[in-house]
Length: 169
Image (cartoon, rainbow, N blue to C red; front, side):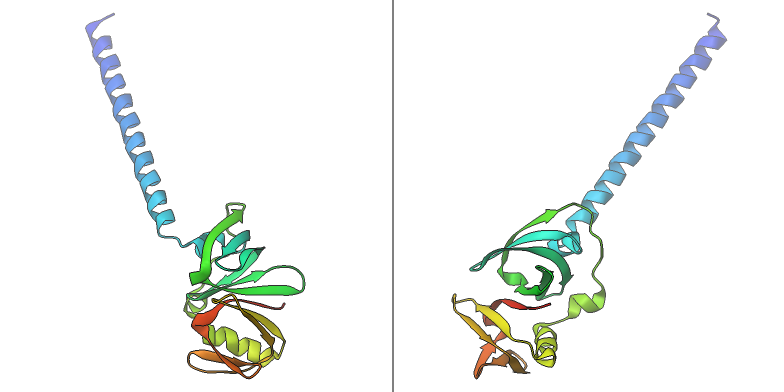
């Protein structure tokens, strides 16, 4: 082999090595960016639109489609006739079925509060079944909401006392 051919082959090898190193560095950077993005997702963002099994503190597991998630609560379509509104602070585990969310939360959805959820239930005048933190429950039609409570069956129930609400879909 001539010296010129050796230098050309050596240069070609060095160029290929540099290209491989550049691709490896790019792949590592992409992997880091993906990991960083995933680390910034809440479980609700990751599971919105998926069927999930949510373990709720004193209530146990609930299964259904995670239809909405706010800063305070999540709406789970349990079946064709039943929804659950669950306090996020009471969720102790989530098992998603599938790994690609079907939707994403809007900023409006993220900012919704318990008062807005209860306002919709008061407006609909449907009977609900409220599960409270102390293990007790209450059935009735919510009639009014306040700054920090809802009135049901003659009781004023603080939002903070609510674990989950079973309601018609």
